[in-house]
Amino acid sequence: MSTSITLPTIDHGPVTLSEPSWCCGHANHIPGYRIDLTHTGPEHPFAFKDETLLVAMLSQDPFVTGPDRRRTRLYVEQTGYSATLDPAEIRQLAATLTVHATHLRTLADQVAALQAQEDKL
Image (cartoon, rainbow, N blue to C red):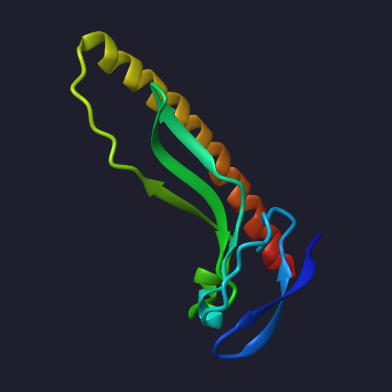
């Protein structure tokens, strides 16, 4: 279920749009262009030894061009992590990446379910 939210823009004035239930809100919204309005979900950090490797979050851009790009997707950002590792640490990193891959597959399933719901609307 979604609610409606009205956000100011510099090119279209106040814009009312549906806000997905997974959206974290727009408390820090700064008026920009309507095409740049984005819904984002909670961040999922993927870490190794207390350093973030990736950050992922649900994302939806309701006003971008192209209907496929308006669908809910997963925004993934890679950090600049780098390290020189010994064999044991390499194995730890590999094991950690395996766990992260499982989590990413779970997020892929969530995005697929959300897109299936969107298709019904």
